[in-house]
Image (tube, rainbow, N blue to C red):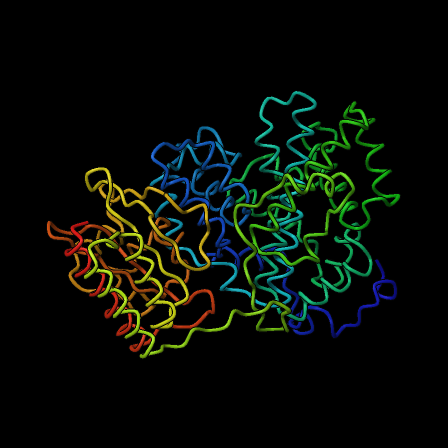
Length: 513
């Protein structure tokens, strides 16, 4: 695409291109030197699977396979010398999860950073958009493979998910001016012109970075073929290529000519009826919208694959996770920030009096009212946004989530978190006589115990956690943070937490619960 057609001036090119050309090999080396973050929702999904008493590798693979950042790391791990003898490559996320195992995933998720914390503004929005496209095309690719009775459609899904992994990583590294130039020109000229736009902005097509990653990181022969445009007659390659082309056409204009042309070509090549193809398109739109809701996309991005079929079925799609509020640092955001609760000493005293009155009145004594008052004191008295209450169950082998106050995932209510099968921060805290203030400055001994079991509740890594003692020993845990309003904790917050934590411990002894 000539520069006159793209409307790009040299100033919108990669800032460093005017000095030294940096090609795909250079960027591949830069990508390989960094540990890229993963989406917060992915870690929460992995934690949910780990917290279940009975969970399968299929459930874990479904959690991992929604995030290209985590998927590429897991497949790469499975093909490393530690896990593989080099006899056969692992090229699907499902197989990689089986090879790596749940313990490795637990440790991996405990050490990752979050995409939402690492990127902001146009950079974050571009990454989210292209990951959404990747997820959509992966679904279509798998369904196309199933329609031609492919023996391993999950491998085709993985190739579709990672087909743009080079671009997604580049969006996290190239100058923000280049990200803006890519976004602006793709919006102007359409996703079907993506490779031409990339050559104008970056000087090369991102698929060459993908091909290098597929080859050197052993991500699968199918992905490498797709990235290098090799074996285009291979039915599996066709599935990924057609899924990618249809996804981009749908994102541009769901009723446009490009969609009609893509549908005709897919029907002819894969011997698929237009009715079956339409059902696949509608289903992919619903799943993509559900992904967008879970992963915090705004309404503009959620409408990317809107169609009559998707809209009609939308009432049935009930996202488990509410929309995340993404605050932009590089550009303004339209999301409203909840009002911060400021510490209020008088309110704290009122609630402490209410707890005392509860304990004095034998007819009113019950544990639920106690925890409601303690949570009210921590939130409206001490200024916390969220409070979680967990009680030891099954002979001390699990922590059962008994109360969530604030903006928690409602799916966590009633969850059973294991505390005896392996050591984590919850286990550590049950042995600590004083509350733990967990933050970036915490000792390595504490931060190394921050597994996904904990992060699914307190993903901000700035929270206070303490055991609640009964007459016979610990009866559970209580934790609080200010994640909802994105405020850091301070000494005043710790004092307020201690006040109501002590009240809770005394009350538990009196109530003998």
